Length: 278
Image 1 (cartoon, rainbow, N blue to C red):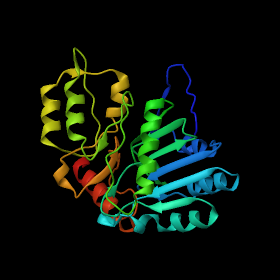
Image 2: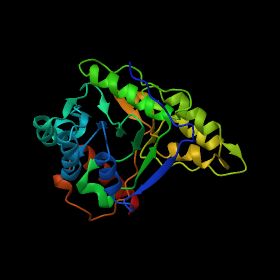
Image 3: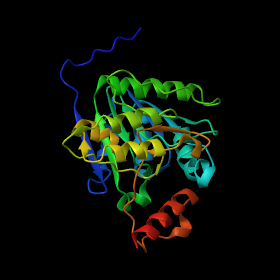
Image 4: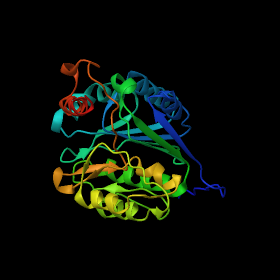
């Protein structure tokens, strides 16, 4: 039996804005683990992040990593095989997520006391060009929700995922099943302020209607922090996806990068934004 003693002080929240902040805060979070480090990642293509995970394992930290294996759009093993091959022989417990679902979640839990909820993948080539956000918090409800879901997903990686754990007070929104909660979040905006929404995709009529109906309203910064990371997409648009308030709107411009070297899913995303930014 393990007894977790949480601080009675109010939880802290730190917003990291990319690309301005750089990714050193992420590397430092990984390297600061004392006992455990649990990561769920859609794309892990960053030698520094991989090296930090290996260094943790070498000094006795129990490191577990769950990687997307859904091949749709050039993702899965096409992106993550090199990281998988590097981590496995160096004491990291690395597993593929169930391949029938796009595992789009990006999160890092350190010592079951702090969590980073991220819109960004750990894909170094894109760091200078993508607008992303990371929320670091020690909120016990948020940490426990992400950790409990990670444990279930790691154990059930040969079967469809169970519903994610969302403890009361965690402020987490998970998919599948996020449509109603996102619409309710939009609809809870208070009169007299402004609703800010930043999302990669808006393909859900309920969410779009909620936004129009609440035009001119808003919410506290605390709510906004997590809403910034929310994908609003009709559940029928994909076979399914594991999300954790996770999406991003790239700040891309024509002529940046070699499109021919990108996975299909990221190449199509960049082409879409370039065509709409011109």
